Image 1 (cartoon, one colour):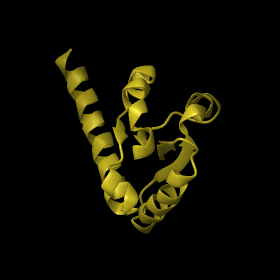
Image 2 (cartoon, helix red, strand yellow):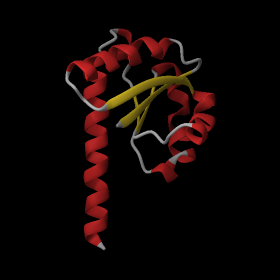
Image 3 (cartoon, one colour):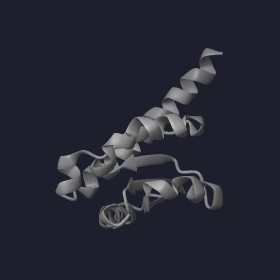
Image 4 (cartoon, helix red, strand yellow):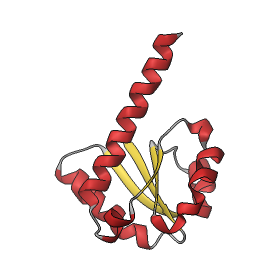
Length: 117
């Protein structure tokens, strides 16, 4: 099962979007688990639970994007922003699709890197 973590300042505002994304994934029978967390808890979540397959940041923590990418670059996973528009409109289908596409592109990139050796 793939894991997608949504991050914001407290984890509360993204929890609504995460729940809606999970409903969409379930409706389409996608093996995905989507959970929201406060940005500051990410290291302990990863340590205690599981590595995510993608990290999505809410617009309210946009300023943490580069720091998050640098801090977790060793995970070699996509770390992307949720657009203000999609977040504000709770466009869960679109956000889920962007996350899945980023995961697919990351997988293809990894395969290319292995093939280039």
